[in-house]
Amino acid sequence: AVKFYAVSKEILAKHRSVSSFGDILNESEEIISNLRIKLQVRVDSPGLAQAPFVETVSLLLKLGVSALSLRDRFIAFHETLFSDWLKNCENETVRNSAIGFES
Image (cartoon, rainbow, N blue to C red; front, side):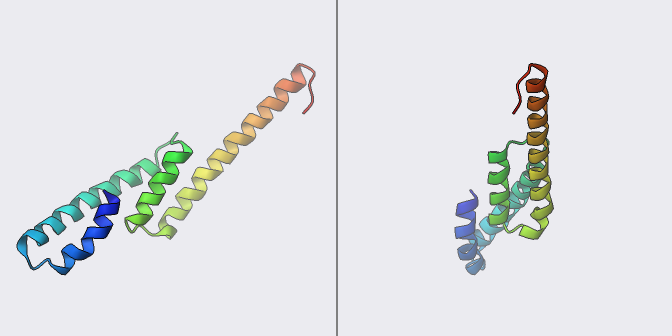
């Protein structure tokens, strides 16, 4: 949907004086606006896996959301991933030490 919107919006805008094209443009812009909102909610969802997060950010960028506005979300997401990874490493080290293995 995003790909086709990006391709067709310029054509529709160019011919918006034709009422049916104008109507289609207005309807598609409303749909895309709602999609943008849903994607922004999704990108902030706790527990979102990395692949869906990256896909969502990519779609938001294609829909004209500024990279600057997504930067903090992108950094926060990856900080969380890194923190989780560190906790797992620390837990593994503690488990290995408890049973006599050293990393």
